[in-house]
Length: 258
Image (cartoon, rainbow, N blue to C red; front, side, top):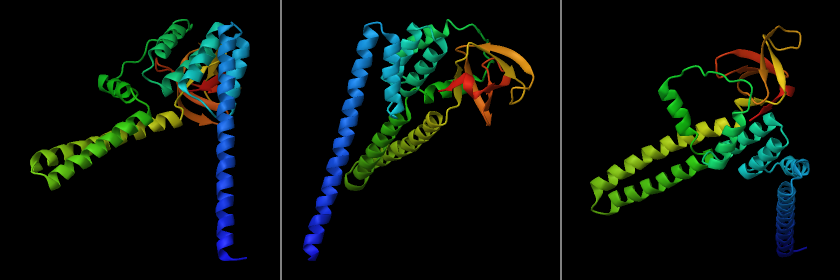
């Protein structure tokens, strides 16, 4: 067999592989889209349990977005599963921090929780920083950083090749530093998105433990829908902090990680 024939067969195999993979991905995307439309139709018809099943089947494929979690949150709210509705509203808000509908529904659901905690005061600058970083997703901060880098390159080009040397150097330096700051924001938000540091109690109630384990001492009771800050994990137990500063251990089976 000549070398030319072998090369042609190789590239033919590559093209066939790409076509098969592309067709499979397109079929999966189309299938997920049809399931999503079916779930939406069930929701509009008031068949909330059926809609929940369809939405969850999409999540099992690894696909998720803010709209999917928002719709699931609405379904759970309609079926009076307060904890699960809050969990999915939180997940939706994490993916779409600027979505006013998600924020409103989350606030509405939180108003119906039993535990009304008084948050421990924190430094105003820390609260401002957290709110500022969470205004955009990691992808959003990444696009801003990319734009700043391009503007910086254009400004330095003006410094090198035009008579606007002072202005070009100043703008180039400014946007270069800005791009580094934006990349820092992206990395910080990416860590928050990938490593869940918060959870929602899904159980109707739970007696917080002093240590990881069913036989440890009960220290206080919490109720469905409360948000918990995850601090540590030992086996199937999570050490969490409440907004009022209380700390305890909760079973993995009783919570949903955001």
